[in-house]
Every structure is written in structure tokens, then in C-alpha cells.
Image 1 (tube, rainbow, N blue to C red):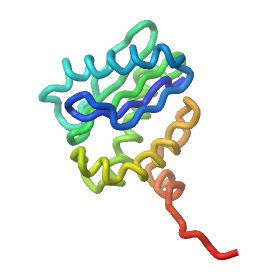
Image 2 (image 1 turned 135 degrees about the vertical axis):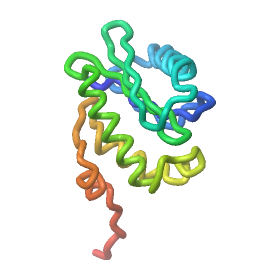
Image 3 (image 1 turned 120 degrees about the vertical axis):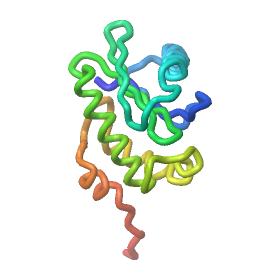
Image 4 (image 1 turned 180 degrees about the horizontal axis):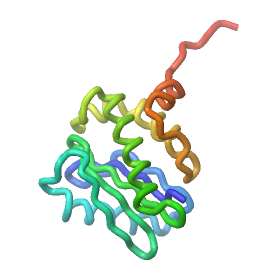
Length: 147
């Protein structure tokens, strides 16, 4: 199961978070743990360079994309290889929505479409869609039609 997907800025402020199967009382622990992990390791990291960690039989894959830190946490069948596939799908969709690796401002300007893309990629803790073109088709917003 994919336990969490977090997006944070370089100062450690969380921009988007999705938890699946994580009790509310443990979420604060995960937030602070992931932000601390990124603060220690992502300084000077190359764009989209993947980092891997494990904590209590849980795998974590994280990276920088522009000014944004992305963390994906999984367990059981979602080992570091499956999480690398998930983070690749997420980063490619974010780049597609933003047109380039995003600054924090651009990320927040495109917040709605990024959330829609994330919801199509990860559904209830499962990796659902990894193809960028399919996700793009699924999030296409259609104007309301008169009935």
C-alpha cells in the first residue's frame, strides 16, 4: 500500500499531502520525519535525483523537482522499485501540468490540476495510472453542458 504522498517546498512547508491507511495520530510523526529527512539529504540534489530510505519496514523514495520536494511512502508490495515508478509518474505529470520543473509559485498556480493528476495516479493507496497521456486524458476538464 502507498501510505503517503507529500509535496513540500524547500523550507519544509507541506503543500499537498495524501495519507492512506495511516492513523491520524501518526501523521504528524510522518510529516516531521519526512521533512527532516529531506532537509538533511536534498540540499544540493540534482533535479529528479531519487533518494531511498527505509523506516520501520516502510520504504521511502523522495526527490526534488524544481523548488518542490516530493516524498512517496509505501509498504508491502510497494518497495523502493514500485515507489520509484510511482514517483516517476508523479514527477512527469507535474512537469506536464506546469510545463517545466516548478517553482513554488508555479506549483501553487497549478494546484488544482496537480491534485487531480495525483488522485488519478494514486487511488486509495494503490498505484492506479502511471502513463502520463492517460492521466492527462482523465483530468481533462470539460465545460458543463446544458441538459
